[in-house]
Length: 84
Image (cartoon, rainbow, N blue to C red; front, top):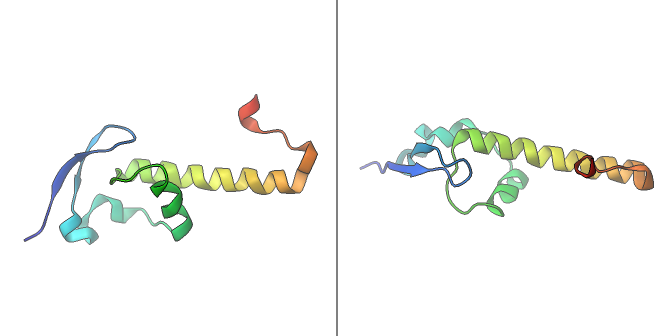
């Protein structure tokens, strides 16, 4: 028997259906994550997230990685965009 659970995304509070019993049909399976992205998200949230939030957090991870690389290249000339 397939397990389906109505949940609320801990990030955006929107309802979604978690299909942990048939994970390939679950809304989260539409978002491809590598190990680093998955670790980044898991450090912030322990429960399932909606696909929209997974995509947003994936983008946030890559933005942070880009900023980190930029800081490494520019060194003392780097200005953090969050400081503006």
